[in-house]
Image (cartoon, rainbow, N blue to C red; front, side, top):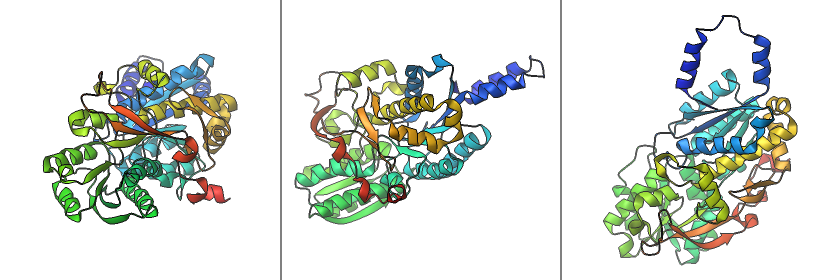
Length: 414
């Protein structure tokens, strides 16, 4: 069940025709046996196609395929738009947790929002399943016993795309960085890889977030640096605009390389293969990777704006499916009583689903699975709609994410 404002209004109107006295014991019993899931993300802005309504659709599929509702457990799913603003996201989550009795928050792209929600869920002892946010701090200095970072992070992106660009000869870098937690973490993690490989970071420029559409002045600064690689530490619409405007400036024709450090399939679709061909990117899921990912895409059905599912959508499905397995193993009452206890149970159980296969969850809350280095195909190589990637390398699960001893998570130290 998905709850939206119009659903609540309709319910209120219908209530006017009912007796004023309701069966209170029945209502309490129903609430005690109900798991409430809140999907929080960008429903209307530059990250909409990456997360947005598609994440809610993926969560609903996970609830359906878990079978938990056929075994007597009620599950309610609500969605909200955080507008990529920490204050808006925090307000929504406070209401969900304090007033409405939600048990788990899912997705939460935009790292600044995720870090704020991370604190709230720990304080209220609820569960946070992060699929959309990227900052590796969620399993580092900001790790929490109530949070699992599911799909990808800035260290993984740096290990994949950043490492590949350095190996290909990109020794000097200049960053165009979205000025918030995600961009800062991505620039930091890629810079560490570059320097460790003997490369050099020549500079960086911070771009306002959200709201920037004209990247021309930032691209000029990057061009003047004469860096071999211009690292785009941004995502979604910012990445699309940066790449389009770089093409208009002829930057790559003059020998500089663009590193799209977080590129989604909807970004490639928006750019078109003529512009995006040759881009190297890292992801943990691709809809056309194998029979399982194609089957998941079929089950998910038509997506908003007719996009193919992103790794964020796959992560929402996978995380909620595993969460509901833990709820069934513990019992609803115990699961509602302690979010930290649910997360502990989830860590103790091996993960296994159609999107990512078998995996594990580490003590620091990092979900572990393989990552993939892809190259965007040329128009001539693409054989059918959304046939956009060719696989360059599979990064094994035990190498794809930052070693647990290097993150500085207090849960690990204790």
